[in-house]
Amino acid sequence: DGGITQSPKYLFRKEGQNVTLSCEQNLNHDAMYWYRQDPGQGLRLIYYSQIVNDFQKGDIAEGYSVSREKKESFPLTVTSAQKNPTAFYLCASSRGDSYEQYFGPGTRLTVT
Amino acid sequence: RKEVEQDPGPFNVPEGATVAFNCTYSNSASQSFFWYRQDCRKEPKLLMSVYSSGNEDGRFTAQLNRASQYISLLIRDSKLSDSATYLCVVKYGAAGNKLTFGGGTRVLVKP
Image (cartoon, rainbow over all chains, first blue to last red; front, side, top):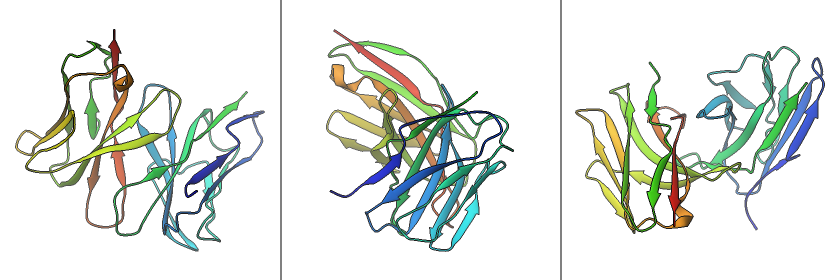
């Protein structure tokens, strides 16, 4: 069964701690993305990667970091520098030549 | 001004009725347009692409008006299962696959 998995579904952390969100895909897609969604708002792009070992900042990269060591994996670290980390985080992937992005089920992060 | 703007709704629609809503975009260089559907607390899923000549997929019709810089979505014969948030998505530029999302229009279909 091909798809994108994100874990965990819910994550709770104390302020000041770094936390890493997992994203794995077995669709053989080259491109992967991380978005953040706040209540009642659209998705905002954090980071994206079009190929292994390469990634670019999106619109709101401050306070986040990523790595792309394997084609199927694109973990996102929310650092203590991110001022408002509580949000719904969505990972997506797409073929390099296709615009359709397939989304994972998301991780709801709550930082108190 | 936001790059992609939508009426947040909700649009309360009687079952079987028709509902339509628009999305405006600010960048005239926008190249591609899509409608995604997002159910409550779930991930977005592609509903349909929007073509210049307009296109239809079953009960859903999408239109693009480049002169006025908006796209529209019309849902005919609304079903209870159509209740969701509909996200307008725009792609700018030729490089990469970066999408810009609107805030979504919430539709509630009621019996």
